[in-house]
Image (cartoon, rainbow, N blue to C red; front, side, top):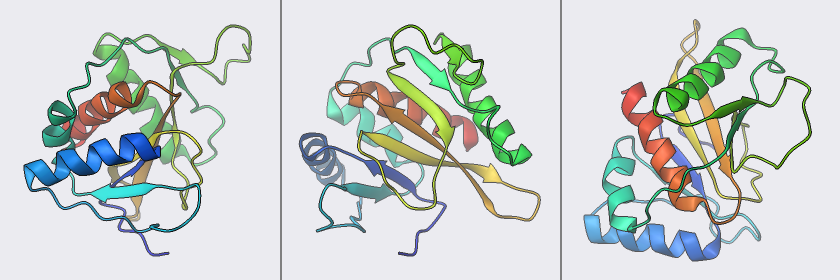
Length: 167
C-alpha cells in the first residue's frame, strides 16, 4: 500500500469513522479510505489543515486526558526528538505528559500515547498519524497519537494542536 506521508491518517472505530465522514462531507472536505474493506482496520486520510475544520464539526468536547510518551526507546535520533517535541508541545498546552520509558509501569494506562508512527497502520484503537517535519535526508518524520476508547474527540483535538504547530 502506498501512503502519502504528507497526509494525516486517522484510524477510527466504525462509530467514530461514521462521525468523521459525516463531518467531512458537511464541510466539503475530501476524505480517502485506502484500506476500505480490510477487516478490523478503518483508516481515513485527509489533507493537512483539515483537522482544524473537522474537530469543531464533530461536536466533541475534549476531555482532560492522561498522556504518555515513548521516546527514549526510539533508536532513530531525529524521530526520537520529534516524539519528544510533540510531547513537550502537548505539555505546554496544559496536559500532563508521563515518560513511559522511565521504567515505571505502575498506575493506570494513559488515555493518549505519543509514539513513533509505523509504516503500515496496525491500530486496534483510535489513532492519528501526523507528519511533523522531515529528517536530514528529506524523508518524512511522522508521529502517532493513540487513544483509549472514549477519547476520540480528545485525540483529534490533540492532533489538531500538533498539526497547527507543525505548519
